[in-house]
Length: 394
Image 1 (cartoon, rainbow, N blue to C red):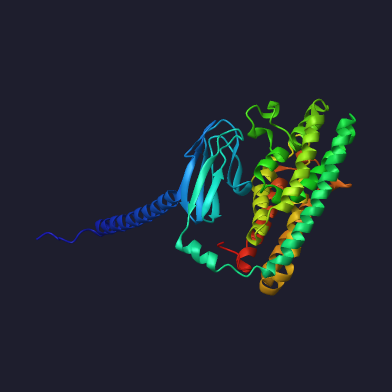
Image 2: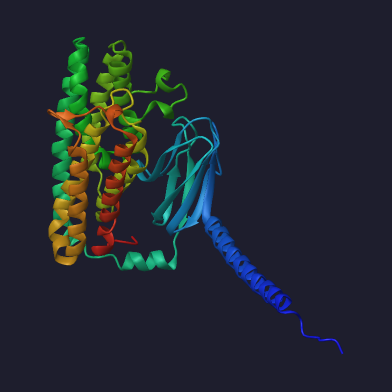
């Protein structure tokens, strides 16, 4: 009778096939699970598509709490998308490139909000946020506000003093433009911008007014030639790109009017304690994700480092105001924040020249990445303050 035992090679081949099938099955299962998780994550996102003159959809309803919006840009230029509570910016994403998308994550309280749609001239939409059991519980668990009265009062003093400094520097800039003194106006643009950047985290909550002061040309139909393009960057364009003062006198007068109104509105608006740090985090995230890499904030004067230093000053001030509370309840976090502040300060300090900073077009891509990384690290550290002080989830 012939031997029925399979040759050893055949046995190994069969065993190998079984192992391959098992491994393939495992990989298929893993891939399927990952795909399902991705589909669930994408399913939880609300997608908004921005076209040249409209958004789809432009009326949204979401439950209170964490919400995620994927903003898809189908227009032919970089755009922004914002969530507004009245005149106040709750969340935003700037410089979404054509053909690309970005995600905005927001912690929303119940209520009705407005949403912008790319160009400032486009129709605004609506966002309705419905209450949930979790949002009701969070409202009931809100910590006592007495501990925050001092820091918030001192922050108002800071806004008042910095608002006065902004008005003073813009007045000097307006006078130089009115006198036809181009070199003087160019020199005075820098301290005026630095004064604005120390207020920027708070000022950017006031959407309409801040658009008049700080909007870039991209957000207008005809860009630099659009009559609605005013404010700092229109003046910057005239001073450093065109290098003449033609048509700048009325724009400088309008800027002075707007920064005067800005100070008044900043002092008139109440700032909830949970927004005190949030406005800094949003400002630093924008610095890290957009402004540091692109150099677009001061594209004509290349004075970006001047503004970054102003943003750092604003962050340092808020940390100082909250230091007693943090030292008591979150000393390790405070040490991390101080380290991140020092790192960004040292990074910017490396570009100091005389009384100012080097031109940003002389900063390499690698150096810009380092600045962005340091700003992001500071944003992450600051983002831990609200949970440490019992303000998260509000």
